[in-house]
Length: 449
Image 1 (spheres, helix red, strand yellow):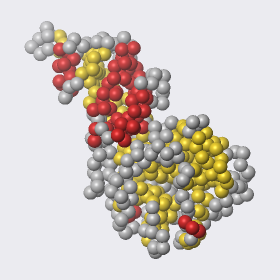
Image 2 (cartoon, helix red, strand yellow):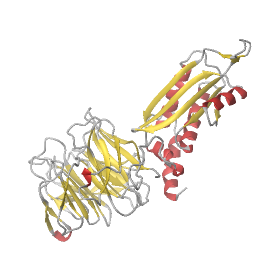
Image 3 (tube, helix red, strand yellow):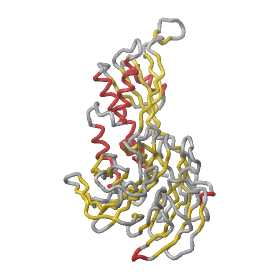
Image 4 (cartoon, helix red, strand yellow):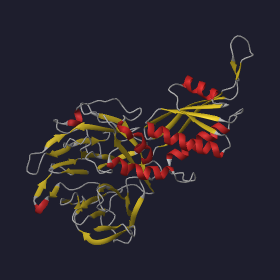
C-alpha cells in the first residue's frame, strides 16, 4: 500500500469505527438497512451466515464486519463466510450449522453503494422424497442502496483493483472515475476551488456561496467556515449566485469574492482554531494565483480583459463564465459553450466547442499533461454527464471522450481538480445545484487502469 493511500485510509477506517448513530457514514447506514430487511422477514433463525461478494476485498471486509456487528446486536449470531460462489456459500453455511444465509453482491456506481442479493433458509428436509427440499421460509430478495461517501471510495479503490462496475476503458490511458457525495451546502454555490491551505501536501476543497466560504477536507469534513454577510452589498448584483475563488501561495491564502458584495476578501486558515480570518480585501476578481479579472455588472460572467502575472493584459475573445488555469495553460469558457484555450501566455487562442458550464483542466492520469473535464452542453440535462477528453487534440470537445459518466441529480455548474491524497493524479470535484435550493459537492476519484 502506498503512503498516500495509507494516509487516505486512516480516516476512512476511523469512520467505520464510529457509532452506528452516525448516519453520515455510508457503510453503517447500509448495514442498518440490510439488518432491518433481514429482521423483517418471517422465519429467520439464528445463526445467520453472511456472504458478501463484489467490489474490492477491503470494501467487502468492511461491509461484512459492520453488517455482522449490526446482526449481532439484533441477536442473530452472525457468521461471515468467504465463498467463491453462491452455491458454495450455501454449502458452507449448512455445514457450519447456520439456519439462515444472507448473500449480497456490492456495487459502487453513480454515487451510490448498493447491496443486492437474497436471504434463504439453510434447513433442508431430507425426508421429503428422492429430492431433498428446502423450507419455503425464509426466502426474500434484498436490495438496499445508500449514497456513497469518501470512505467507500477509499476502500473500493484500494489494492490497485479496478473500481467495481466502473465504465469500460475508453481510451489509451484508461481513465476510470468512481464517484461519491463529498459534502452538502445549504445554499447554491457561487464558486468552487481546491488547494493546499494548511501545508500538509493534501488539497482542501473550498465552496463559496452568497453567504459564506466553507473549507472541507478530503473526507468531506468541515474544516472552517466564514460568514460574508457583514461585507458591504454590491451595487450590481447578479440574479443567480456568482463569484470567484482562488488560492494564493506563500503563505497560503484564499481569495474569495461573491458578486453579492462590494469587494472580496483575502482569507487565511487558522487550523488550530478551525477558523478563516480576513487578512486583506480584493478589488479585482481572483481567477488564479496571480491572474485577475472583473465581473460584468449584473451578469454571471467575467469581462474579457484579464490581467496576468506582473500586470500583463490578455484580451479573451468574449466574456466568459469559467476560467481554468493549469500552469501555462489557460481555458476560458464562454456562455455559448465555446471556449478559448491558450497553450501558454502569448500564444494565439484555439477555439474549442461543445463545453459545459462546469469545465476544468487537470492531470487525472499523472502523465504531466492535463485532461479537459467538462459537463453537458444542454441547458437542463437529466442526468448531467461528466466527460473527460484529451486536451492535446484540436477541439477536444468534439472528440470521443476518454471517459464519461452520469452525475447525480442537479445542475453541474462547477468543476475543479484537486490532489486530495497528495499524489500526482488529481481527483475531480463537481459542484451541483440541487432542485431543493441546496448544493452538493460530488467527488470522483481515479481508479487503477
